[in-house]
Amino acid sequence: MSIVLICNNKDPKPWAEGLSLAFPDTRVEIFPNVKNKAEVTFAVCWKPKPGDLQQFPALKVVQSLGAGVEHILQTTPLLPHLRLCRIVDPGLANDMWEFTLATVMNHLKKLRQYQQQQQNKSWQQHGYGTIADTRIGVLGLGKIGALVAERFAQLGFPVSGWSASAKNIPGVTSFQGEGELARCLAQSDILINLLPLTDSTTGILNMDTLKQLPQGAYVINVGRGGHLVDEDLLSLLDSVHLGGALLDVFHQEPLPNDHPFWTHPKVSITPHIASLTNKDTAMAQIIENYQRLQSGEPLLHQVQIQKGY
Ligand code: NDP
Image 1: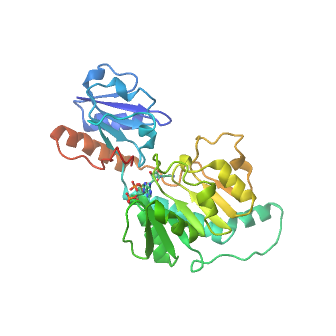
Image 2: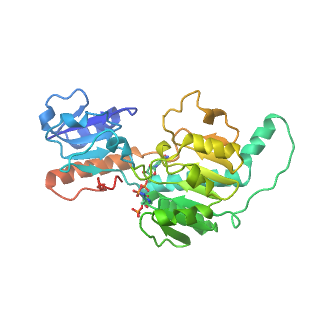
Image 3: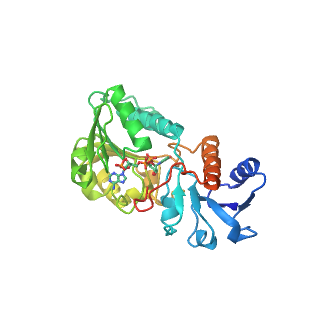
C-alpha cells in the first residue's frame, strides 16, 4: 500500500511531508515520480489531468484536497469500485460566512462606490440598503450554504434557500428542486451561489435564471466559475437589470487579462479566496481516511459519485 499526491496548481510538498510524518513506514510519492504504481491505493488530488488516476491499477480511494470534487470528476470518470472523499471543515463554512457578510454589507452601504468617488475627490451622498429590507437567496444549502443562510437570517435578513431536498433551517424559507428555483430567485435581492459544480448545475446562472431575479439584484458567485454563463451576466449588468456582481470563481483561473470582468464597473473580483482550505484540518481528515482505509472502517466525507457532490 502506498500514497500518491497528484497536484496541479497546488504545491504537493507540505501534504507529502505531513503524510510521511504520520505514516513513516508507508511510501508517499509525488506524481509523476512514482516507483511502483501497482502499490498505490490512496491518491490525494487537486485537479488531476485526464489519465493520471488510471495509471494506478490497485487504487481504492481518491481524496480531494478541497470541499469540491468537480476538479476530479470532470477529468476522470471514476470506476464504481473507487471511493471519492472530500474535505468538510466547519472553519471553511465559517470563513465563507464572514466573506459573504463582508460582501453583502459592502454592497448595501455602497462602499465600493465611495471608494471610486474618493479617487476623484467627489463628495456625493447616495441612499443605502438595510438588513430588514434586503432579501437574500442562497443556492445550495449544504455544509457551507446552510450555515451562511442561517447566519444571515440570525442577523435579521429575510432569507430563502434552494437545494435538491427540502431543509429545515431556522429563519430560512426552503425551496427544493428545479420546480421551485424560480420562487427562490424571485425573492433574492442578493443571490449567493454555493452550489457544487455538477452536470445539473453547470451554467445554472444564465440569462433565463438571472432574469428572474428582482430588478437591481446583486449576484455573489462563490460556487464555481462553471455555474455562470459570463456573457449572460455581462448582458444583464449592461441592460441595468442587475445592479452588480461579486465574483470569486471563474471558468479559467487566474482570470485571463483580457476578460471583460476585470474592467466592468459593476463587477468586483476576488481571486478564489472566499474560503480557503485549512491545511491542519484537511491534513487530519486525510490522515484519518488513510487509517480508515487500512482498518476497513467507513471513510469520512465520502461523495456519492453518481450525484457528483
Ligand atoms: P455540499 O455538498 O455540502 O452541499 C451542496 C448543496 O447543493 C446541497 O444543499 C445540495 O442539495 C445542493 N445541490 C446540489 N445539486 C443541486 C441541484 N441540482 N439542485 C438543487 N440543489 C442542489 O457542498 P458544500 O456546502 O460543502 O460546498 C458547496 C460548494 O461551495 C463547493 O462545491 C464549492 O464549489 C464551493 N466552495 C467555494 C469556495 C471558495 O473559496 N469560493 C470554498 C469552498 C467551497 P441537498 O442538500 O438536497 O443534497
